[in-house]
Image (cartoon, rainbow, N blue to C red; front, side):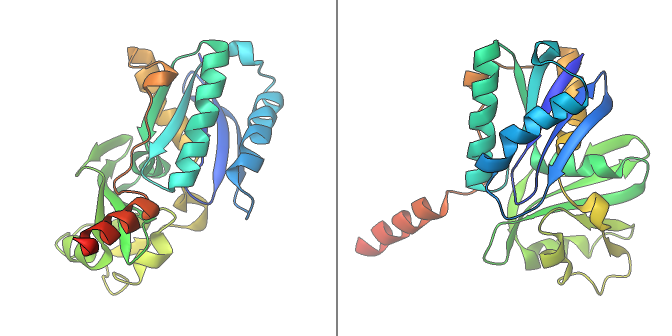
Length: 234
């Protein structure tokens, strides 16, 4: 069973092909090109390099949020086009949950953070014990200071990861039990998306592409500014 996985919820973007829970190819890029420029060429490369035809793909998976409003829209639009044209099911997974996938085999609390601007982060905490990953809280948007206060109550090893890790780590770098993830494990990736979604495909927990929606924890900036303007005019 081959799954095509997409990830473009932040600056990095990646595409992977997962075959029965095994990674057979992944293309990853982290440059200042828009995902509309890079995503579809990476789809072609990931398929070509793994000698996979699109007819071999049984479904698509994507990180549906939280993350960049533009990046998520581009990724879901691409997925909907591919699924609709080929009549394939799909699975959406939490971006924060797919980051935690990088740390299987460890014994630690995983603090996955994405930059939400204005000293806020999208965040979720996970407990990793070997191959087991247990969610400790729902995805949420928090002030960095609020999250730092929560982490101060943990006595076990904490690994800070995600595209907001460097930003947030400044608030907790004095904590002896808190470490910054190494660069190669720090970011969300299509591999994590595919591995998270694989179990959902096995269980039949898929949806048609028209049912897949982005997950936003906050309103887009333009909508927030419009709402604030209307409130001031009252």
